[in-house]
Length: 71
Image 1: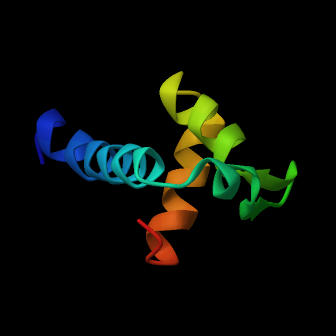
Image 2 (image 1 turned 135 degrees about the vertical axis):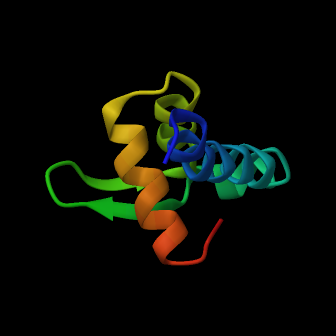
């Protein structure tokens, strides 16, 4: 598997997340979207900041949201 193939699913999840976030009402962005084992509850707003900055936590968030079919 080449490097482009490895990054594609993550990019797709990131794009789906950003698209979903952009379409959320402002009040919904303060709601909890996922619970991480180490960090606890994460809101849409906090998840957005992590995804926007491509952090390690963003990878975990995107994986969980994809598994839950939320994005």
